[in-house]
Length: 252
Ligand code: SAH
Image 1 (tube, rainbow, N blue to C red):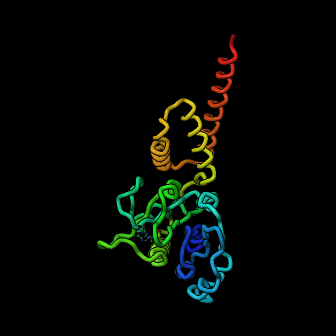
Image 2 (image 1 turned 90 degrees about the horizontal axis):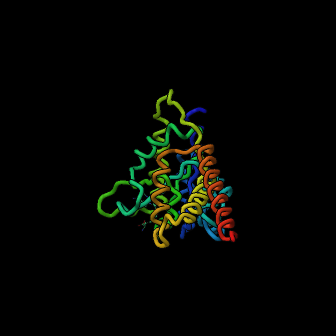
C-alpha cells in the first residue's frame, strides 16, 4: 500500500452533531487532508444545504456519501482501531495523548486496520458510554480554555494524520490485523455474562469492572483469533455451569 492510500483506512465519525454547518466544515477539512469517509451518528439525516454550504462543492461528495448510523456501536462495528477525542482533561480512564502522539502509535497499524476517529457533540462531548468503545483518547493540548469548535478539532486531527503519513519512513513494518469492534464487543458481552454467573462483580460495580477489563485488554491488541478463543472459553464455561445448576437443582 502506498503512503497516501493509507488515508482510505480512516473514517471520521461525528456523534450526534448539533449543527449541520459543523458537519460540512468537518467534511471540507477531511477532504483537504485526503480523508473521504464520514459517518454521522444521529436519528435522522441532517439538512443537506447547510452542510453542503460549509463543505463547498469540492467536498460535497463526502456529504452526499455520508453514512448515517443510529448508534455508535453500529458505526464502529467494522473498525479495529478506535480513537475517541475529548476536550475534558484527566477525567477519563484512558490516558489522553496529543493527536501527534496518537498518530505515531497508529501509523504502523494503519495498513491492516480500519481506524475510526470519533468526535462528540458540540455541547457535551462524548459520554462515558461512547468512550468505553475507544482504545485511545486524543486531547489537543491547549491553554486554559480546552474546548475547540468541533470542526476545528477535526481539522487538527486530520492535519496531524496527513502530516504523519506523508513524513513517515518508507520502510515502516506494518503491524498485524487486529480484532474488529464487533468481535471485541461480542467477546466483552460473553465475558460479562461469565463474570456475572460466578458473582465476580457486585451489582453496583459492573461498569467499574467491565471498564477496567476493557482498558487492560485494549492494551494487549487482540486479534480475531484471540477474541474467538476467549469467547469459546466463556461459552463453554456458561454451558457447564448451566448444566451443573440443572443437575444440582434436579438431584433428588
Ligand atoms: N463541552 C464539551 C466540548 C465539546 S466540543 C466537552 O467538554 O467535551 C465537541 C467535540 O470536539 C468534542 O467532543 C471533541 O470530539 C472535539 N474537541 C473539542 N476540543 C477538543 C480538544 N481540546 N481535544 C480533542 N478534541 C476536542
